[in-house]
Amino acid sequence: APDIPVAEVRAHLDELAAIAAANGGNRAHGRPGYTASLAYVEEQLAAAGYVTERQPFDYGGTIGYNLLAEWPDARTDEVLMAGAHLDSVGAGAGINDNGSGSAALLATALAVAESGTAPERTLRFAWWGAEELGLIGSRAYVDDLNDLELTAIAGYLNVDMIGSPNAGYFVYDDDPAIETVFTDWFDARGIPTAPATEADGRSDHAPFAAAGVPVGGLFTGAGSVKTAAQAAVWGGTAGRAFDPCYHRACDSTTNINATALDRNTDALAHGVWELAGL
Ligand code: PHE
Ligand code: CA
Ligand code: ZN
Ligand code: ZN
Ligand code: ZN
Image (cartoon, rainbow, N blue to C red):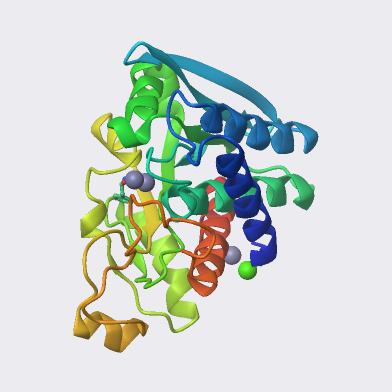
């Protein structure tokens, strides 16, 4: 897999921050900052040759949208999916939660387009709506699949919060084969990882896991506090949250650890390359 320049990911984060600033300070479900975020990601993907689709769903009397993007070239009908929620909470711009995952996923999708090679499996990327209100968009997507569509999905990779300022390196311990693909990337660089127990059932992988799809993902920590043992292996500050701005107005472009964002973007790309057969 390519080494994705973190500057590309940061450029997407700057756009998402500007979108929030121009739209009342957030990118939340049902708000103009969400639809503007959707349009930004959609436009980048369409320009790169992706087939994109907005999937509407109704929540709380407001229409929300997922964005699906498929790479048109593939050699089998098996599907690898990777996703990130694109909505923020109402309190702020949501740059680590989850601009970070959304931007890394976009940079990875654009790198696939640039690679000029056809994957073995069909690659389908998803930006989910209304995660913050209870995994609404991803659940609507999974609920809408028929049996054939569901069993075609060989795996789902989730990224939600991958640039936490006081980062840990957590890998979802759901499907062992997917977990190994990610831990191999970190092991090869001498970066210790830990199972993402804080993530269990709490992001958009959960509806896929509940439907029997093998899932995995990456996470750098939310509101829980880094222990002394964790600070000893990862650096950062013991006794402080992984993300002290979790769900707060201060989750802005300064609320990002560039090293963590860089490593997790490259690890995500590695996972996509390995599991899609690129
Ligand atoms: N999904 C939670 C949120 O968006 C945080 C979280 C991220 C939980 C990743 C688990 C895994 O607020
Ligand atoms: Ca990189
Ligand atoms: Zn999140
Ligand atoms: Zn959140
Ligand atoms: Zn690789």
